[in-house]
Length: 65
Image (cartoon, rainbow, N blue to C red; front, top):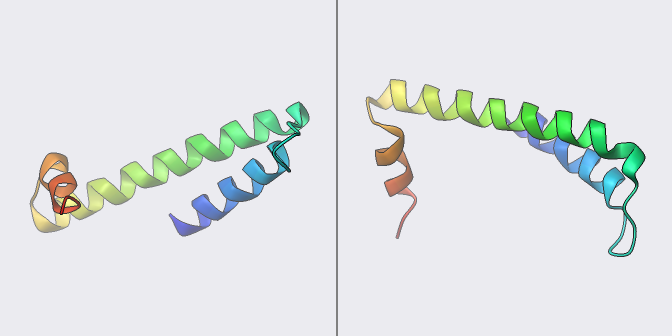
């Protein structure tokens, strides 16, 4: 998950290097990295839910104060 998030961060920085610039040449790479990160997040969520026998809704409720 952390590796996927780090890669997405790099591709995002390439897409939007500063607040005034968008490099559309980096868009496809950023989209691939975003979807890869989303898939890793889903795998991690599924693993946690299966390990602890909880639903995704229960997992989300644990993040609430």
